[in-house]
Length: 153
Image (cartoon, rainbow, N blue to C red):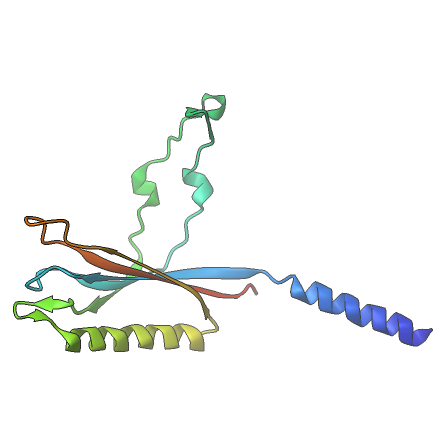
């Protein structure tokens, strides 16, 4: 009988330990794909937190619920305390620079390894491109979001 109680207790512990809570951190790389290398490329991470609820209102049928207008100020959303790491642009005057891509990979890998050694696990990666939209555009970025997670303490 004691073995059954011990087994149930251990089984309960396993289920409780599975209900873990994580905190997340987003790191964003923005790499310029502007021909002639005039763009700016950066790796961005924040040192501050924001609560999305402070800037959110509820809407139904296009109208604010209970006529509560979202009166949050854009300047309250803005973060001034962040880490900005320079990256190289994909292009220079001669064209695409594979050395720049390799250098960016090395810098981004260093950031990922630093996050990993600090207890963060790379959970998701999402990327997108806004590229040249025609003859007179000549602008574009390659953006990647690295989403890390670790157990809440």
